[in-house]
Every structure is written in structure tokens, then in C-alpha cells.
Length: 324
Image (cartoon, rainbow, N blue to C red):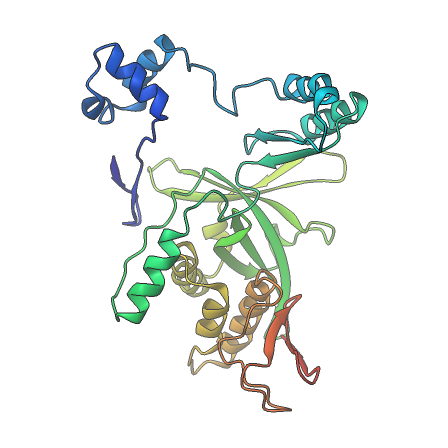
């Protein structure tokens, strides 16, 4: 099923059937090809009739799965471990309970994988090979941005723009920046200094247009929501940030996005200080060890010396360092 969202991004959903489920469909006289064209609402009644209903990793009782290992591992001569796959919305308390149960029953090993906690997991390497091949052949490839959830974790980064305190709100998807909002830290957006994280909520206003709100947890554990990020920020900066967000969500490698923003040529000096703040915010998410786009060290002239480390550029050869 193909979709186009409100900003024109194309994305596609498709089903992946286990081969045993395909066998069951054929035995029960279902047309497999037609079944793959059904909507999720139409497909669910068929799945409920099969022996595989409630049989996925997200459906099982995770605590009982750990207890099962504790019961059978006494008959295993060598190492044994259990990997518990849990949905993205699994609470911290449930994770604690799984690990504690593993300890109580004496499990030799236990790993928890929360859906979305790491990007690139369980993805075939063929895509990367195709990209490399396309690059070698000079092919131009389009990418599809992942559909934005209604709620994204957010990181707050504070910086100075023309000697005025500003903040950047970065929406994080699978550990990477998906979008960025920036604005002066005044009036309703003078956030308490202890606020470093929160959530960006996407919804519709009374006119049916997109609206983005910011929410954070105060020291007493209450959720505080600031409505309308767009109305809080200068429109000129809002448009700049919207363009940068499009680059981010379409998967440009972060080091290239940093180089793109850093290289913006603008006449207004205040825009320059703003872009420096955005660059600093994005650099925080570049994985340590990533080679800089312009990786020649200005000190020792090692052509591939500059690497990212904790948001700074470090020369692996001479130790030269540059931070935004």
C-alpha cells in the first residue's frame, strides 16, 4: 500500500508473511496474492483463525519466556541466553521486571531488544550494496522518509544567536534527528534550565492544519505542554528549520547535513550565529568515529585525520580538536 503524507513524502507499507503462514493460507484455500492486497482490518480476521495468532514476539508473555529459559537451561551443557523482543512503548518498569526475573530464576544470559532502540537492525545488507553500486554508476536515487509518529522524543539544545539565548528542539526518530525547531528562549519558551528532554507532539488545529506542541516532565512528575511551536518561533527561522528537517528525515548522513548547514551563504550576520547553533546541535548526534566530510587536518595535514567525537572534530593523528 502506497501513501503520500501532507508534505508530499511517499512511503509504502507491505506485509511479510512467514512461510508456514503461507502454507496455512493455501491449505485453507486462500489466494495468497489477493491476501497480500488486503488492508490490516481485512487481514486481521484471517490471522485470528490461524494457529499463528498472538504468536509474534510482541504478543508473548515476556516474563514467562525468561522463566522458561530458567527451567530448561539445567539440561543445556554450554551457554544459553534469551533475547526478549519488546515493543517500543514498553515501560521502564517492565524492562526492570524482565531483568529481575532473569536474575531470580538464574538465567545464564538475558538480552532485551526494544523495537526502534537501534537503527539498522534486522535490515538486509543488500540495500547498502545497491546504494554503493548506484553511487559507483552515477545513478541518482530518491529516498522515502519514514512516516512521522504522532509523538517523538525530543532533545533540547541551548545556544546563543546574536548574543540572545535561543533553543533548538530536535525530534528524535530511532536515535537520529528527524526534525528541528529553533526559537528565542523568551516568553512561553523560556524553559526551566533542568529541561533537557521532552516530546514533540504532532496534531491538527481547529482548521485542520498541522500543529506541533512541546511537552516535558517537570520536577514533580507532571507533564507540561506548550502548544504551537510554530507560533512561538520567528517565521524566517521556522522556514529554514523546515528545509533542514526535510534533509534530515530523508536520510542525508548527519556529517553531510552538518556540512550543508555550515556552508550556508547568507548576508545577514544574525543568520550566521543561528546556523552555528544548529550545527552544534546536529553534531551531538554524529556517531563517534565518523569521518568528517572535509577530513583533512589543518594542523598535521593528514588527509583523513578529522573524526567526530562527542560533537567535536578530533584529529586521530595529532590530536587537533575543534568544537562548535
